Image 1 (cartoon, rainbow, N blue to C red):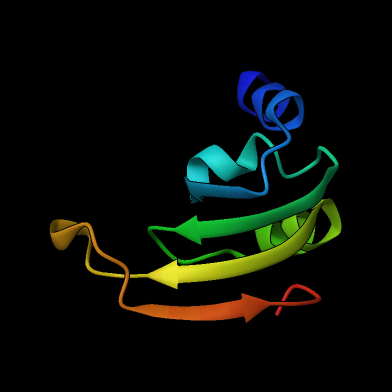
Image 2 (image 1 turned 180 degrees about the vertical axis):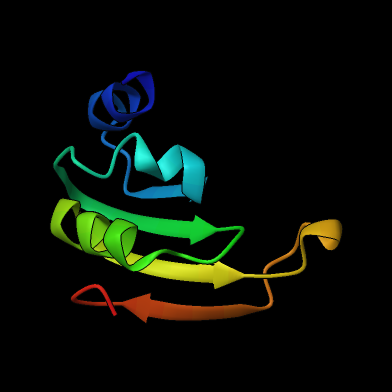
Length: 79
């Protein structure tokens, strides 16, 4: 996937993506990357894959129509 290759090549420390885009990198090692997941609900299976792939995962939530995040939670062990 192009996004995961860009993250690795650039030495990115933070990846801020909506859930559909995070699915493409969930099975790629993202050592040292803090994955910020935004948009709709974070499904448990995707949370588990991201926790295994990234250094840290934070789930963000906000009303879609406002395009802002109003809540956050660190995700560990798929919970």
